[in-house]
Image (cartoon, rainbow, N blue to C red):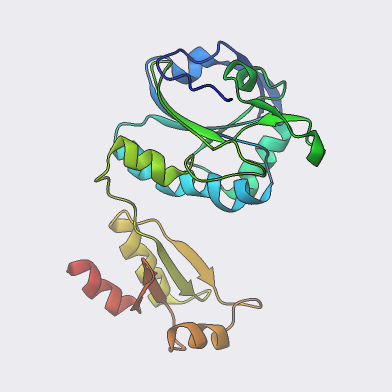
Length: 243
């Protein structure tokens, strides 16, 4: 049975990382001393659940964690630094620090190193998350020991709810735009001035006006969505933000 290490210090490990084409060793003291840190660990970079849900979830909710006293969010995986660096780029995970536990030393010290030889993975980490304050583990969420790759409790939503059940989550904002559209530029400026992060979907070969009209009922841009609700163009956005 995987042990819960709440109340204990994190393992004393040196991680071998690569930054700006140079090797850089990072110790657990550097990562945790004097800080409040959320850690989540997963079986492997570029794997389905890790890429589609686990890492994106923490990256998306990073502002909410910061507002609730978390200094840093760390993702640990038994992968080498080259793989982790490429995964960070692929995921555009600017809000999460990806740490390579290439030798599995940290994971083993946490008692979370498991055998996934049946998948050709060798030794990997069991999926879990934890809240660490000044190097001491306050809370751990360990996935149930069942076959497969359970993902029920180590997600970002569960951790944020533990830290603050009433935490305000960032709004999900997307907008359809066209290159050179002045109204699109105005909409993006308004969102930025209100501190609202957004995902821009530029109409082109893969997303066409046909698709835009099918989704929004309008053929003009920008078209802004907030938390799944169609707001509309730049004037509609201005009215929404005023309210």
